Amino acid sequence: MSRETHNFIGGNWQAATSGHVFDSVNPATEEVLATAPDSDASDVNAAVQAAKAAYQEWRLTPAPRRGEVLYRVAQILEQKKEELSRVMTQEMGKVIVEARGDVQEAIDMAYYMGGEGRRMLGYTAPVELPNKFGMALRESAGVVALITPWNFPVAVPSWKMLPALVAGNTVVWKPSEETPLTAAEFVKVFAEAGLPPGVLNLVTGAGAAGAALAQHPDVRVISFTGSTETGLKVYTTAAALGKKVALEMGGKNAIIVMDDANLELAAQAITWSAYGTTGQRCTATSRLIVHKAVKAQLVDMLVEKAKSLKVGYGIENDVQVGPLVNQKALEKVERYVAIGRDEGANAVVGGGRALDKGFFYQPTLFADATPDMRVAREEIFGPVLSVLTINSLEEAVAVNNGVAYGLSSSIFTENVNAAFRAIRDLTTGIVYINHGTTGAEIQFPFGGTRGTGNGMREAGQTALDSFTEWKSVYVDYSGTLQRAQIDNRE
Image 1 (cartoon, rainbow, N blue to C red):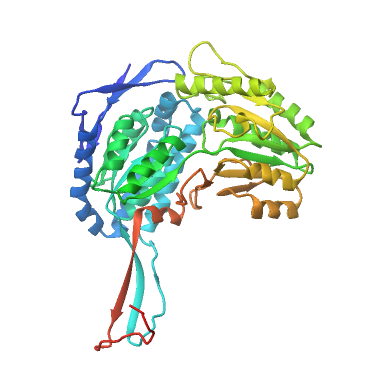
Image 2: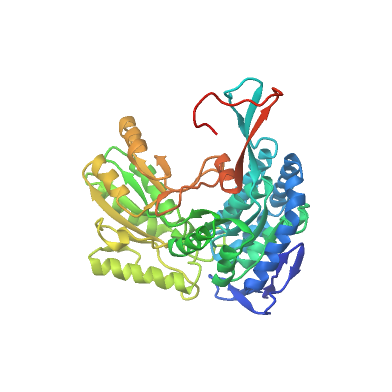
C-alpha cells in the first residue's frame, strides 16, 4: 500500500503549495512505495524563511545543549534502526545489511558531532603587544542548504546536517527525489529528539527545488553531494552569489593489486567494493589495476566470486546485490557495457540484465580494458568493473592518477616500501592499504581531489569548516592606544 509524505517546514508537515506530487518507486518490485510533494520555489522560500526565523534563537542556544539534542537523535535512531533500514531498502534498493550500516553511520555521526557541542575548538596565539590577548573562534554561518543523493539517504545527510546543527546553523534539506520517504522518516527523528521548529526543514522535489535553494539570497552555505554535472551547476550559481559551497561529486576509484599481494584477500575486497550497493557508491571500485604476473589468476577468482553473488530483493537477508535505483540508471549501465564491448573490452562475466522484474543488472567484469577506454575513465555508477594491466608500481600509480576524479584508491601489497610509496604518490582524498576502496569512518575527513570536489571535506572535525566562519578577537587591556611598531601594519 502506497504511503504519502509531506514537506516539513517550521515544525509542520504540509503539501507543496502547487499540490503537485511525484511517486517514489520500489526498484525491486517497480511498485509505487510513496507519493511526495513536488516542491517549487515558493515551498523553498517558505522553508528558508522558517529557517531564518529560527536561526537567532538556535545560534544562541549554548553549544553543549545543541549537542545534547544530537545525542537524543542518536538514541532514537538506535531504537528505529531496523524500521528505517527497511524503508531504505524498499525505496532505493540496497540490501538490508547495507541499509543497517547506512543508519549506523548516522548514529555514529550523531554521537561524534554531539561531542563537538563541548569541543568545537578555536585557538589562541601570542600577540605582538603587551597587555593584549588574541583568539580565533568558530561561529555559525546562518541558513544552510543541503542537497543530497539517494545512494546513502541517511548517512550522507547526517554528515552534513549534524555538524551544521551543532555549530548553530539552521537547515533546509532537499533530498533526492528517489528517497523522499526515507528522508521524511529521518526528519521525524529530529522532531522527536526536541529540535526546535524551523531549525531543520525538509522540501522534496526535483531540480527546480534544488535550483531555488542555490539561488535563494538568504541561504549562506550550500552543501551538495551528487553528480558532477549537477554539482558544477550548483557551484557556479551559488558561488556567483557569494555563497560558501561544499561539493562532493563523482569518482572512478581503483584498486591496485601488486604481484606480491594476498590474492584471496584482494579478491574478497574487490568483489565487495565493486558490487556492494550494486556499484552505486561514490567510493565503489570500478577499476582494477593489476600486475601482469597475477592478472590471470586474480581474474579467474573474481569471475567465480561474481557468479556466486545472489542478486535479488535486498529485503531478503541472503541477497548480496540489489537493484539499480531506477530504469534510467539501469539503461545507463546497459549503454556503458555496450560502449565497453564496442571499444574492444571483453565481459567475462555478467553483461546483461538480471531477473524479469525490477531494475536488476548482473555483476559484470571487463577483463582486458585499457586506460583510454571510456569504461575505464567515466563514472558508470553500477556493478561494472574494468581490469587494467600494469608492469610496475610506478605505472599503476600513473594509471590510477590519470582520470578526472580523485576520491578513493587502494593498493594490495605485502611490501611496506611499496605501500608507503603509494600513500605518498596516489593523488586521491582517501587511500587504503590492503582493503577495498569503501568503508570510510566518520572521525576522518571524507572527500576527494580534482573532479570529485572543491577542497571541502565531510566527517571528522573538518566537517565544521563547511558550516562555520572564523572570527578573530583581540582584547587590549592596557588602557592605552597601542600601535604595532611595524610599518604598514593595520
